[in-house]
Image (cartoon, rainbow over all chains, first blue to last red):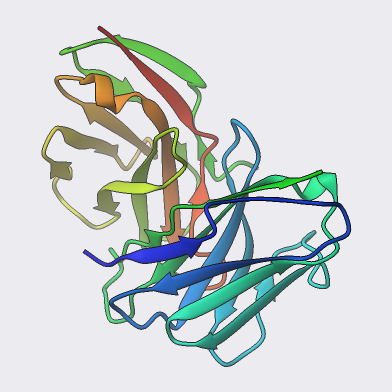
Length: 118
Length: 116
């Protein structure tokens, strides 16, 4: 099946620094990728929809200046947490949609990134 | 209003027994898809099973089956012959065809713990 690679799997950073998370579709071209945030023991919350070659669509309440998303190619989307603060500590996970599937299309998820901001 | 509701935050099941995880949903769209994902402690999301709103038969994938009751808007996951490796969080999700921006709406999840 399709594979989505997400790096890094874990990152610890100091408050005020920026952190970049990469999401790659390894064997298909993903015109659309999604970024989710998950707090401990909670469900996934969609942060934004990333479309190749255009600006990301952010969900209500998500700061676009804090969470920069770039989808520069059909296989790579990046999420940059700018000027990270402890409240940004969370589990971030991306997913990609393989084009051409019918309504039963399933998303392929990355393995997630645990961000800890000190 | 919650679009996807999973009323069981946590469940125990004895190894080798079957277990049902509840999921109810709310939509006015005639065409939608329902998904179940498994999230082990590593965090990755693993696709388990899919049910389309127009599918006549309940979906099955190995030990997983989906008890789809459209009139009641429920899509319960049934795991047969539970294994220790089934211990994980399980999320029910819905995709509405006319909602292209918000790909999937997830329920709050159910933590399943399989006892040896």
